Amino acid sequence: MHAAANDLGMDQADFRRVNLVKDDQFPYRTAFGFLTDSGQYGKCLDIALDAIGYSTFKEEQEEARKRGKLLGIGISTMTEPLGAGNSREYDIIGIKMFDSAELRVHMTGKAILRTGAKTQGQGHETTWAQIVAHELGIPAEDIVVEEGDTDTAPFGMGTYASRSTPVAGAAVAMVSRKIRAKARKIAAHLLEVSEEDIEWELGRFYVRGNHDRGVTIQDCALAAYSNVPDGLEPGLENNAYYDPPNLTWPFAAYVCKVEVDPQTGVWDVLKFVAVDDCGVRINPMIVEGQIMGGLTEAYAMASMQYITFDEEGNCIGSNFMDYLLPTAWETPGFELHEVVTPCPHHPIGAKGIGECATVGGPAAFVNAVMNAIEHTGVRNVDMPLMPNRVYEAIQTGLDISGAPPVKGD
Image (cartoon, rainbow, N blue to C red):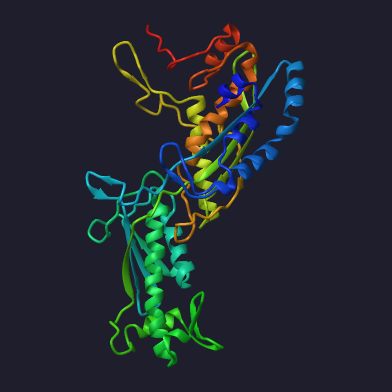
């Protein structure tokens, strides 16, 4: 995108904007046949450009050159299909890719939730409990989330490709709604009215027209084991399988501003702005942690990480002495913004977030460095953009391709 804009003589932001799907075009069928669900792509880009100060950047860039420094700005926009996937189109060796959840509410009003997903540090225990709390009004601290126990876990296709919330999280919402539907029948029995006369507010059923006359979800849980109406099976537990009708499509705009020292090739990130639209955010802190972690790895990929082989075929980068991990010392700060466009086919409107920053982030860093040195005639430096490679490109005016060379004895 960066090189194409330059070849056409177009402004980097304008080139991206004319290629974005417009709000009123959703759902939008891509050239590859995918159906993107919803989005406000232009809004995300505009927020990012305003936050980075794009309108005044040219003046900043010229002023920096007078001081012997090279400023660059890089733009990256991304979307990707998450939440694989609906059983009509996706499977793994014939096994369909839906997920399930089991929820049991004890007579005490406390609950245990089991899913077929498995947390890898994304905070499922927090997020799943919040979904149940949102659907039933049971306090999150009263919900035990159990994952990864092969003796008890229900069916699921695992945690990868940012599919946890789009698929397993949806199953959690759906099983919670099944529980609420049964609890409504019990509430009607306890209140001695027809089920049609029962209204719901978070954590409580009440009689239409008489708000003060009601019972809590905890009251219904106790009654499920002690006072159920005739013809209704005791207990308050259920399971749900969620087969997504479509993939989910988050979107992000990332803009990076860097300063390159032409004498050394060292480049520093002056500012990085991330605007993510991952639909409804269940726990904003967890979402921001996912974005910051992804951007940290994006910076690492762009600046320091690679795997190659020496002349004898030994892998260079097979351990964390050679394959560098970014620390707080190297990692820049990130300014995060959000746009919320709910997914129209997901039970709670969520789209997923885990991979977004690692997909779109590297290009923003690389494009920023390329913008800073493009006056030398350089069009591309392959990742990682280590200082010696950037310096060589500046000095020669030539593109740098391939993995960094490994010098022998």
